[in-house]
Each structure stands twice: as C-alpha cells, then as structure tokens.
Amino acid sequence: MENLRVFQKFAKKSNTPKIKQTNRAVIYTRVSTKEQAMNNASLETQKAYCEDYANKNQLQVVEYFGGTYESAKKDDRLEFQKMLRYVKNKNNEISFILVYAYDRFSRTGASSIGLSDDLKSKGILIVSITQPVNFSDPMTSVVCENLFHLNSHITNIASRNRIVSGMKSKLSKGYWINTVPFGYTNLNPGKGKTPNIAINEDGKLLKLAFQWKLEKNMTYREIAERLQRKGLKIRAKKLSDYFRNPFYCGVIVHNLLDEPVLGKHESLISRREFAKINDLLYQNGKKYTKDDENLPLKQFITAVSCGTKYTGYLVKRKNLYYYKNNRIGSKENRSAKIMHQKFEDVLRKIQIKDKKYMAPMKEIMKYTFVQEYEEQLKEYDIQQKRLDQIKDKLEVLEERFVFREITDEQYHKFEAKLKKELETIQVHTSENSFNLSNLEKSIDLALQLSCNLQELWSLGDLETKRSVQNMVFPDGILFDYKNDRYRTPRINSFFKIIDSLSNDFGSNKNGTRSNKKDVSRLVLKTGLEPVRPNGHWILSPTCLPIPPLQLGILSQSERRDLNPRPSPWQGDALPLSYFRNML
Image (cartoon, rainbow, N blue to C red; front, side, top):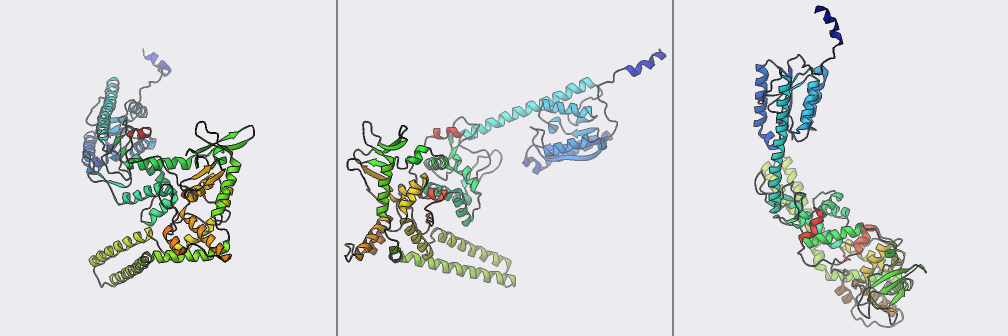
C-alpha cells in the first residue's frame, strides 16, 4: 500500500480555493444615505461589532474602508472599489473582509455572489458579524452565503418598490420629489415632510429672463449678460434647459408619471407663456426651405378683395415663383419678381430721400424728445448723483473701520444698509438707463437705418427681409390686385415721422410752406418707439436692437430682435396634454 504513494503526483489538483493562512483583515462599513452618515450612529455600531469580532478571533485589522454613505445598489462605489483593490494586492496578504451584515457589502444579488467567488479564489473570505457562516463546511458555507446575498438583493428590490410607490403618490398630488429646480427653495425640507417649494430671489430674476425671451426674443447670451448686471450669474447655455422645463409654468412631468400634473408650487410664468417661448425656440432653430427664401412676403400680404393671405408656389417648368391669393376659386396670381420690385418701391418712398437732411432731423427729434421727457432725464441725473454719494459714504465708512473709529457691529450694520440702497438704485437705473448718450445713439442708428431700408431688404437674407417687413409694417401690407398696387394701412410711426420731416425739408427747398404747423409736436406724439405686431415697442432710446449698417446686414440675434413673431396662443390656460410629450 505504501508503494502506491508514488502515484500521488499524477492526481489532479483540487479547484477548491485554499484560504490564506494569515490573520490579517480589513473592515468595511457603510450606510445608504447622507443623513445616516452625518448621524454616524450606524457607522460606529458597525465598526464596533467588527472590531469586537476581530479581537475575539485574534484577527489583525490592518485597514478600514467605507465609513461614509454609498448605495449598495451598484458595486462601482469609490470606497468599495478602493477596498477591493487593496485586498487583491498580493503584498497585503489579506484573508478576511469583516462586515456588519452581507447587505453592507453588496445588494446586487447575483453580482455579489460572483464577486464573493472571485475573492474566495484569491483566498479571501467575506465575514458577516451578524450572519455567521460555517466556512469549515464548503457546501454549507456556499449555500448560506449565497442565500444571504440573494436575500439582500430581494430586500433591496422590495424597498425600492415601496419608495417608488411613495414617490408616485407624491408626484400625482403635485409635489416635486427631486432636487428643487434653480430659482426655488423648499421651505419645508426633510425626509417624509410635505415639500413647500417657493420662488427665491434668484427665481425672481430668472422670471425676467422668461419675460425678455417672450417679449423681445433675446438671445441666451444677451439674457445672461443682463442677468449678470443684476447680480445673477448664469451660463447662457443653461437658459435653454430652464426655458424647456415645464416646472417653471407650474406643471410637473416625470418619468414615474403617465400624465403631466399641476404642481403645488408657484409658477414663474403661465402655461401659455411657456408654450409661446417654446414656439420661439423652435422657430429660431428651424431651417428655412428654398421656397421660403424666394417668397419672403408669403403670409405677409393680404388681399384687398377678400382679406385672405397670399401664399406662393413654384412653376417648375419656368423655374419662376408666384404669389397667389389663397382663397379657393381666386385667380389672383402675380409674379414674385414683380411683387418684390413693387415692395422695394414702397420702401424707397418712406426712407430718407437725401442724407443731407439727417443732421437737422436729428436735432429736431432730439430737442423734442428732451422736452417731452425732461422729468425722466432729471430723475436719471438725480439717481446718478445719489449713487456717487452712497459710494463716497461707503469709502468713508471703510476708512473709519480700518482706523478703529467704529466697531465691527457698526461697520457691518451701516455697510449692509448702504449696499442695499446702492443695489436698489443700480437696478432702477439699469432698467431705466434714460440718458442723453443713449438717446443720441438711438436716433443716429435709427436714422441710419431709415436711409437704407430698400437696400437692406433687397440684399438681406430671409430673416433680414422679414425683420424689415415687420418693423416697417407691423400689421402687414395689403395688395390691390385689380389696380396692381400695394396699400399701406399702418406704417410704423417712426417712419411716418421721417417721411413727414423729409417731405417738409424738401418742400421748404422749393420755397413752399408745410401744412404741418408743429413738426415738433408731431414727433413728440408719435415718439421713437414703433409698435410691434404684438403691441410692444421695437425701437427704444434705452435699448435699441438696430446696429450701425455698413453693408445692410444684421447679425442673426439682431435680426431676431427686429423680427417679432406673433403667437397664436391666447389666454393663460393650457391643457396638460400639451406637456405629455415631455414625459
């Protein structure tokens, strides 16, 4: 029998892992939430139990891991991966990972079982202090440990389902459950509490951003710069997310909901306003077709005969575009080339005929404006002087504080008071920067534009053409097909002024007197602010979107400012079904 031992070397080696014969161990502790980690009670308990086990079993704890909050739903935790790298390092010779319970190690079920097998192959055991496993019996230990891992996974799934059910219930009642969006503050924070989400100071400024986009279609960059001047720093690109978030109009959309619901929080804007802004965002981002570019007056011309809008079409055989009355049965068709020439003639008639009249026209308009708004200009000067006085007081206050003439309490008290007053005046003056330098700039740019209307329209791209059209003729233009001519029911009041002043100068040149006895009063009443189609002013001495014209070309953002797009939305109510595609 003894002679058979020579055959032992031919036996296959066992696949059963051999546990390292060391007493070196690490301890891993964790909790699921930040609140638990801050409380630290659970972490200290886990650590105490593990250290007690190590002492009783004469194990040497060489390192601690975790000690913070990490969800066990996934195994890509920072502290967890750090621990795994450490124990797998052969130089460390670790034999045991001590945990309070297997669910502290992982709750991933099959994944944690596979991870446990991988560690065993390297001679490392996962030891749960509260769930003992007899590792001397390989079969029993594997079954028991795997059951514990699976049970942790099942418990995690059940807990998640309970949480999701509670989240759905809150959302369906109109309560937001995630991180409070920018511009809002939860006045009733805490787990399990009913949220009370209110608009904060940042939200009040963000509301202005929505208004600027809606009323002036300003670019993201322009809005961000304005907000920064008011003390709110926002990245321009981030505004796109805010404008597309229904939360700001009081609607909650969430992937846990089947339908949008009305939120309990206060809205920054109405649902209709939200829809209008998103219409603008869509229009600004869309690409125009070749037909649009060749038919800029489409839907802008109205037929005198029936009040129907003109559309357009292409005759492919001739490769020519035509405008047509869109009324069924109408035979009012006209060549686009001829319609464009006639429109340019209309623009040519209302622009400044001779640039030599610009200087006297500027002086008349400036004088009239100053006379009319004398009180506002004086108020602006008073505010500027007040600003200088407050700044001087702040300097004196700081100087007295440095030389210890006043206490810390006195300094901070009066500093806060003066800075608040300073901020109030700055906000007021930024919104009403009504000064002579802005006025002169506005008049110069406006007069320069009025010399170039026809050229700007004829040489501009589609956006530029539409900008000029809507600016000069806010209600569109009529076409009398029978007499083959345009009618202009309402011209922008600013260009009416220019036309009347230009004609007045021209008639004086011929030695005739104008029938207009009070040109200044004419300018005064019509003002410098032509009306947009939606009723808002487009040309303002405090905020003029029109740039100096060198080649008759405007930038894309400036064209958008000049091109108001009336929206079909009316009223404030908007069905929640509108937001369904945002879920």
